[in-house]
Structures are given as C-alpha cells and as structure tokens.
Image (cartoon, rainbow, N blue to C red; front, side):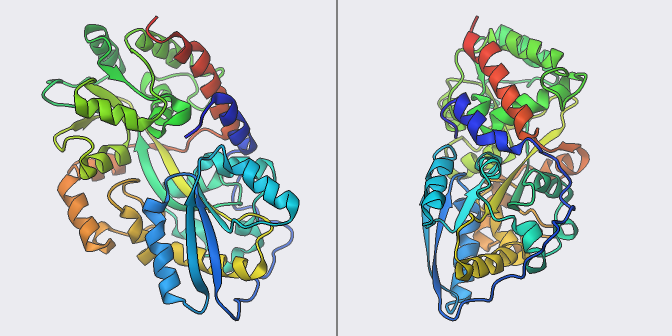
Length: 397
C-alpha cells in the first residue's frame, strides 16, 4: 500500500504513543449532535481495501434509514495520498470527506496531524462500551487508534506459510527448516516488502517470537536473531515484490513454491480462484499471531448533521448483524471485531464459500495460539527502514 519507506515514515510516525491505554477519558465529553431533520449524502473514502468488509453494512444502514441518509458515495485511494488531501481540505475549511476507512497507517498519520475527531472519548455515550464488546485481540488493536478511530474488523493474521503440495511434499516446521529449504531450493520462496504488504509485515514482526529473540517488541535492540535470519534468508530470494498480490500470482503460476501469507490472504484468493484451491498452509514452531485490524475515522471539519449520522452508523457497524457481514469472502478472516458473532450469522452465500474453503484446523489454531498486536508506529517504521537497508537492498547477495 505504501510507495516508499519515507512515505511510510510520514504516514505512520503519528502513532508513536502506540499502545497508550484506551480507557483514559478526556476531561470533556461532548454530547452527540442531534440527528438531522432531512437526509444527508455521505462521502466515504477507502484507503485500505476495506469496502469489501463494510460496504454492505453501510448500504444496509442507509436502506433502513432513508430519512437520515440519501446517498453514500464511495471512493478509493492509497494511504499515502490521504493525509495531504485531507489536510488541504481542512486548511481551506471545506472538508468533503466524511468517513475514512483505514488501517493503522493512514489512521496514525491523521493522529500526528490532528486530523480526526476523537470520537471514542468525545462521544463515548454515542458508542457501545468498546472494551465490553470487542474480542480480546480487537481490543488490543483498538489501543493503537489512540481513541481517534474505531476498530470495525479484526483478523488474527499471520505469519503463516502458503505452499503448493505437489511442489513441497514436506513443508518446513521450524525457522531453520525454512532456511535450509530455501538453500536447497533457491528462488522458490519469497515474501513481499513489509512496508507494502500485510503478510510481509506479519512475517517480519512474527519472526522474533519464532526465533526466540530477546525482545520481540523492540526491533532496534531486541531482534538480533531476526535481522541475522532475514539477511541469511535473503541470499536465497530472487526479489521482493511491492505487494502481496504478486506473491499470490507467482504461487499460482508455479514461479514460487512457498510464500509468506496470513489467514485472509490464504482464504480469499482461493475463494476467488486467484490461487488454486488445493494450496496448503503451515506454521513455524513457536509462532504467535501478529494481528491486524481495520478502522473508521471521522475527519475534523465534518458538519454536525453528518457527524450525528456517522456516529449512529458507527454504532450500527459495531452491532452483531453488521459485524457478521465482515466475514465477506474471507478477505480479513474471520472479520468480526465484536464477540459472539459466529459464521452462522453471516449471509448465506458467504457461509457457503467460507465453509467450502475454510481449513478445519483454523479455529483451533486461532484459539490455541498467543496473539500480539502490531508494533507501535514508531517502532514499526524503524523496522521497515532497517529491513529496507539490511535486507531489501541486498536481495540475493
């Protein structure tokens, strides 16, 4: 999603406070504005591919509330594009973006530049009590939002390995196995540049747990084993693509035999036919889930009429019926950020696809494996920079 590591630095650096406690309330809590007397048109911009997960719920809300919403216009952009565009609108006093669908990247950029309305604190009474309704992993990810965005979808994520069973008869079981396999099969394993790829990010952040590094939360002083391993692994990798899609394509074409993946990327491309259904997945001994999340954020400058509707729609998005729609076609599997939303609540067509392509051991793997939130933005940017310099820049050497 990011075009360069410097863009990533600008985008992510705002999240330096990272895992600050969400429960701390601001000194002043505002009363939510009254709902409008006539319907409004909402402009929603997606910078994270999130429409696959939440567009259905937004459209359902609009259909159920024609006196509040006349139309929802959806547009898409990349995370690096958004901050400048939104800041220009705010500086001009003419904000025409009502809601941003984002991951941690653009969300953190908005935090740094004070772009978002801190709805979790300012309008707490208009929202559910988040700690009570969220899954534990989603609550950890919500902390990264620093009260200024609301987690609407959650994925245990990765790192996992995806491979073609006809080419890999016995998948690696340990990090050493993987390194040995790549030495015996040069150029047949790869992963996407972490700054541009969810699976790449989870592979990078997951290795310190797998390797038993000194401090998995400190990429500068606690990842000695990880950095050495990545350099060694890179000697057997031909190149690092700039996005996850390329890894899926080359796996499907037979150009690669094993790739780094995560749950959504394992399930969704097989459902869509991008990757053969028979592709298999494996985990390395000692792995922890490095989780992922999607957020809603409301820019400062949105009118009171629009804000009132957005707060009400956000409350709906956190309801179980709306959360059930985030199962989608496995794009962010499972998808719901809220507790007690089983697959049986999802639309029938999505249930059918996920049941057909799901792996029977997913549920146990999710339940039995420790999970970790991603690094706070400042540390993640450091990890991206160092990876670019020490790993990406010396590929194949």
